[in-house]
Image 1 (spheres, rainbow, N blue to C red):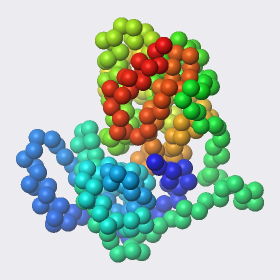
Image 2: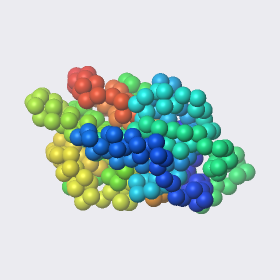
Image 3: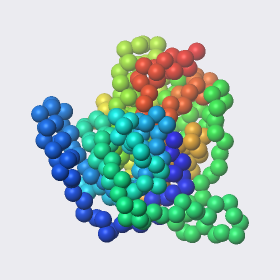
Image 4: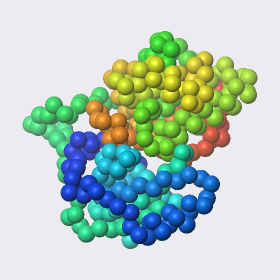
Length: 316
Ligand SMILES: [Cu+2]
């Protein structure tokens, strides 16, 4: 859903300093005050950017946006939209201002307005690709090319270090169903990594309540921010989600391993960028007891029930 992350490293952003100061429109302020009575605490942020793509179902929009004051730096990312009409009439390439609403567990865009074109500089998506004549600059990292794995195929062995500093690998988990996802602990958007971690936390709870699965299943959350996500930090992150190291390995690995595993499942993330500029999509992978891929859950719209079903399917 999010190829842009692969081809558009965030450092190609022009930071559009001319528009560094944004302010809420009177309309959004009005909405805010009428909704302040609800119990859910919602914080509103205003962003500016360019629409990259629109979800076919009208429920998401990928916006390449400038820094959002007090919230996140410039990046290209998909935002959920709750009401499809919000996106009516908009097309990729439109310069927009938008309002992002964020709760402790959710985030979505509820207002988007087109702004005059040329008001926001757009970086060219053209990057040196396979041309032999173009020598990658120092900022371009060569990513290993690996085969995308289909259900039924064996996932190659890779080695990790868990939050306790203990080494393990996928081969050591043969005989168990493995649920693997990709996160980074500094992820600023509640609907992304934190949401996956909440889902894995809910799954861990179910596993503990289902004795055969308690021993037949293991969760692995692999950080793609290994320089920051030390075992200590992963331990602390895990505490927030009640992670039991016996069931849930919050892990780091060499960047080569992270990139290869990510490639197998078409997970994209930006390299060597500030955390708040991280661009990534979401993959949660279920591997059966024989090490074969059962299913890849893309994005964040799946449920814990669906994940648990795939786990049970892999437990045979
Ligand atoms: Cu994230």
